[in-house]
Length: 112
Image 1 (cartoon, rainbow, N blue to C red):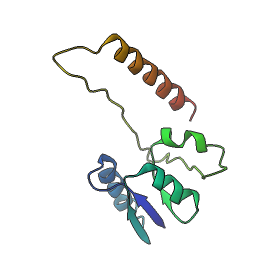
Image 2 (cartoon, rainbow, N blue to C red):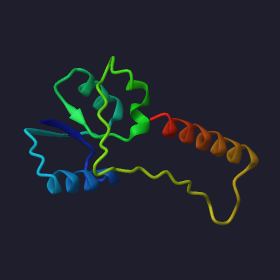
Image 3 (spheres, rainbow, N blue to C red):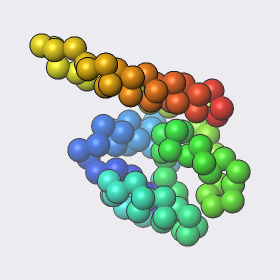
Image 4 (cartoon, rainbow, N blue to C red):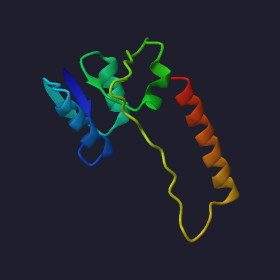
């Protein structure tokens, strides 16, 4: 298995390493890359695989460019959080943008 993983500074890396260890997954080659477009391109060419957040894979659910295989057991989750300054609330424009992003993420999550 040729696996593209994020570098160790990426929060997902620890979870992936633990998942591989726990389930005895042996990797033939490991490539560290934080560039998501590069990761997607390597996977599309067919010699590499990666474990990615589901929301990144929504457009690939048809299987034309990449094959998506959801990890159901045990499941992996991604949490999205908003960080804002504690001394001042978000502007009305920023709040609207946040709500639009939240709505879209919720919609995409339900479609998977």
